[in-house]
Amino acid sequence: MASFLDLLAVSPDLLALGEPTHGESAFLQLRNEAFMSLTEHGYRSIAVESDRAAGLIADAFVQGVADVTLDNALAEGFSHGFGAAPANRDLLLRMREWNAGRPVTERLTFHGFDAPVELESAPSPRRHLNQVCHFLDLDRSAEIDDLIGDEALWNDTAAIWEPGRSVGRSTDAQRLRVLADDLVTELYLRAPWKSVGWQAAFVQATAAVALLRYHAAAAAPLAQEERFARLAAVRDALMAENLLAIRSAEAHRGPTLVFAHNTHLQRQQSTMTLAGMQLSWAGAGAIVASLLGDRYAVIAGSLGASPALGIGPPAPATYEGRLQQETSLPRYLPTSDLAAAEQRTHDYRYFPLDRTIIEHADAILHIPTGVDAAVLAERIVALPDVEQVVASEENGSPEAAWGDRFFFVGPDRRQPFATIVEHDVPGFDEAAQLDRPGVFRLNLDLGRAEFERRFGFPPKVFEEHRHEFDFARLDTLVPHPGYAQHGFAGIVMPGPQLLPEIDGLLGIAHGRAVDRRERAARRATQPEPEA
Image (cartoon, rainbow, N blue to C red; front, side, top):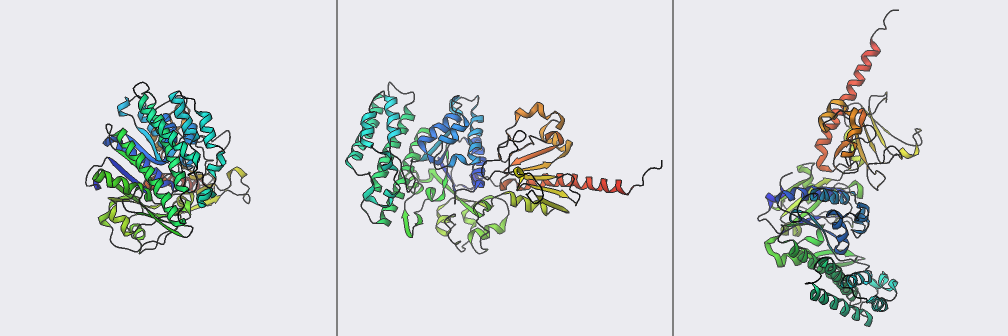
């Protein structure tokens, strides 16, 4: 792929990389590659669409805090369920590895920039207020508990649809807003004596204020369509406020990459259809762009197909369809390269490219397809004389392997040259964490010579090097944790950018299988020696 920085007119302080949908891992995997490459250009921070206060936990792991485990960081350091994405695990680990042994000024920092809200729900600010009070050595928990009351009233999703049920404009909620504002003032007053931990406490305080603002908007006595547009706008305004605060904190350390859905990052008005309502509002990108000017740049994400999401190929006359015709690999391209085309039919899973998005973006990242087990299987069975066997109850395979795929050259099926597996084998092959939703691994018989060329040691001494590998990392060729001594290697969830390398590795493994079959055929035709 071309360097996306070369496509930008100026070097921005805040570079936005968007995705047109949530749930397609290819965007997160390419985001990881983009961010790690940007570190070579002075970038020292990333901000993702996740709760900013929760992000403090993820960043603690990135900074190497001993009592924050990876499991903690994924479970508590992301909101909206994003901690379950395998690529987010990799992002945190790669950032932590970069930071090891580096001075503070060069370390990478992880930020969330969302408020702790969903469009249709928001908790109470209790937890955030109590944490600020703890930092300030103030005991106001009884007062806070009394004002918040029943937590279920704050979490009531029906209150978002019926403003009369919302607590957001109650007398107690108004008093909480004053209390939260007073705590922010108190933080500033005590900053000269409590500088250590001050930034984290400030994030907690602003999260509490954000929740109270959002609940107030939910209680607004407006027409349904107007109120939901207002809620979307308030959430994005809170995102913009967080992004500007992050940039203020990071300004002396280098530019920041921000990653989120296109609707939150684009410069133009955002639109969405919700329950038959047509919503339009200014997203965080529109707000930030108006304040930062050319210090803000946008690369909008575009997608051809996603097997994981059930999104099929686009029609040839659409923007995405025309991009599909150029190459089968992901690429960054200037928006000037996109001629007028039809807009793809809108799907709730995917926000398609249109002329307005293109005109307001600096560049486009187009991913022709996400990669799942079936996509890889199609490439493998296209090789000469390949047969595929899918483990099932019908062919006598153990239940733990059902759905795994085995690829052979010829009908003898003695030894697969490649497999695609989606399950851990307890007690034998668990290091890749294949039981995570959507995770699979491509395994390849590379043979001794290619194995040693790739890893620097022969298969027979693999156990001496096992500790050097993270077998659960995506997009990385590693020795097979169970069959490395036989020359096998594997890649967990290879992204579409790796397809050329995958084809090369498949060529090696397939060639070995062809050689084995030919040798076996020659032995079978040779006359037996006389007694």
